[in-house]
Image 1 (cartoon, rainbow, N blue to C red):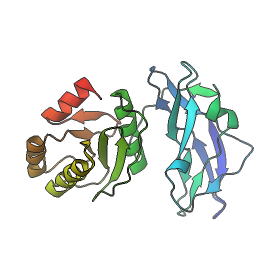
Image 2: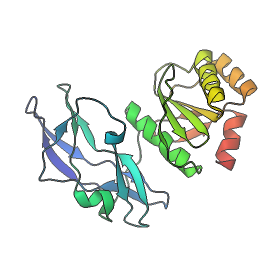
Image 3: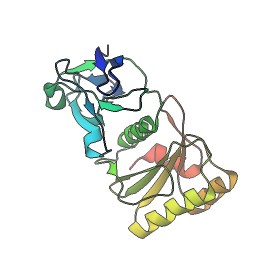
Image 4: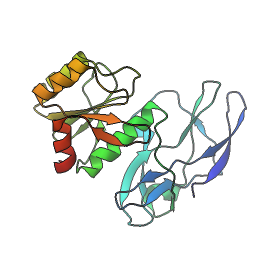
Length: 220
């Protein structure tokens, strides 16, 4: 089971209990990083993509995979990185777990998308260099993905901007949205052959057009 540790916010001194998140390995096991109970949490001042991810080795199959670094948001507004045991990043110290991947934050939506793309055969997924009108851009070899965790359906402009950006880079593109798509956005995606996926709150990516059905079936 995922382990829990007491955490005190250094800004307001409020006490919390933090439980490590669990994520699914490609082998089917659910794993979570071992937490370092002896070290204090660190305050996150600025978001840095590389610092937000750690490499953890699955305790069942031994596969090393990047997962989000454990973090906790205090009600006072302070964001904390929870320390991880050193062996968790490069050894087999990973705890099996059964918790589902539930989307509660924008970061969870990005994580769910990364996991889905990995299962479809895309490797070396990273933050995209290109800036998109909304959401978060992810890049893999030959692919530009947009993750939109917003509360409004993706618009025609959102879909067409993604397609145009991908065209300039000579790569394919795919759109993941939590709130779905406007009717004209779906119609345009069908014409432009842009796969559209709906992210539900359990972390499942559901195809909503023909191009997405094909990507889901064929992969990279």
